[in-house]
Image 1 (cartoon, rainbow, N blue to C red):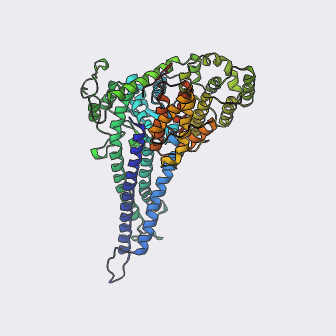
Image 2: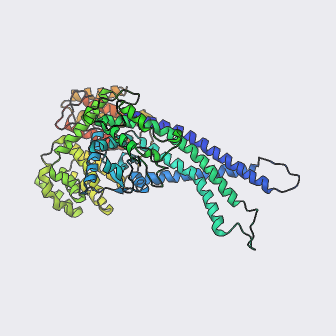
Length: 620
């Protein structure tokens, strides 16, 4: 599955969505203009006047106000969801966060599966929410980017499904995170809300008339000429015409993505029976994938399965369960639960993946499982507690030199004394850790770090910076930690703004890409000639002439990453391919190159699967 291709496809679909949205807004505006003119003609009782359907003044104000109300409603909703990230959607749907230190066995199973899939997919571990009141089997992924994404599941999903089935469902949701579907989903929610604004105004008019007694005269007799009730009812009807078209758009866009996400789940897990069996359970359960929350309809396209019953297939946000199961594995008989060990390979369809893609997914999952197994018990315990998580992260940055250690100890005594108390118990487990495991383990600490009090975050981020500078220089691992942890938690605590696209021409960011390639070439090779060859290979991927290999610093690298984060997805795609070509040119990957590439990928909000522990070579 090509992350950047899906990002670009989502962007193109957004353009189509804007056009269809514009058509819907125009249709609603014309309908309201016709309504106003009908009222105008009825109200005009001048003898001898003829019916007219054109009034320049009414047309002007209608064209100004109606689209303005719809656009303002959509914009406000999108900004609200963007600012709050996936957590705001999860709370709106009745979800409650699962604490990293939970002892509930079902919640622990859920957290373990989410961690495993996040490492395999190469994205930050998202927050997990459970919709406690929902007994149907369903799940969703929501957020504006990987940094603020959340995974939500119904209680029925968490308690009913086996681990393999739950893994298939969670892998499906991670596909939406990895392939950039979430941003499009947020826009869809905003569009639907904007069009509903017309219906809401109609309801407000009706309620105003009812509670104010506006339908009666001073003497208590009814006023037959009050048009407000009629206008309110008409606006409700017109609003639902807009909802009709919005749901049509939403359903058409989301159905095909569900097939792709099912295929990606097979890629990640290499286990078609897991997700197919989960779909089978939904088909057999009386509640199915139903969600009772009143906001479920506007968020229906986010879910794993249809959250409400659609009597017309045209409005269904998901393909039929039978068709989804057939595409995953044509041999599954819905009348009988299949034996997982006897499940044959998935039949090829336009949405299934090649054997090579599935093998890559299996390798990534195996690497994730190996990383989880190699995590020391003390560090595993730290993933459940905010204070211990900070101590574990500080331990990864602890120096061997006693002079530098004293500086670090003074820093923590001043900025985070509680974590300093936990440090001696964790240090012995951190120091012998395999280099290829350190960064993924550091990312596993993020859910627990999110639980720290908001007023502690400034001290925490300052402590990270001072610890890495205690020896007056920064190595690549320290740089990667600073980029990854501060950026991911910065989004959580509001310290980092979400980037906007400023660069759509690769030539405008050429100096920044050259900086990254130079750093990867220089810091992963042993000779000037080898570095120049690796740099030239990366530049050739971009079809650019290889200039002289430049001298770089980590400050320049950080500036380059910050600027490239504002580049369009297809530019990031070219950049990451060039970076990968650069480090693979000599047939091996140094740990320093891996750490830098992880930092670059995280800074660009791009998924990067893990390396196998102790791995020195990776396949192109």
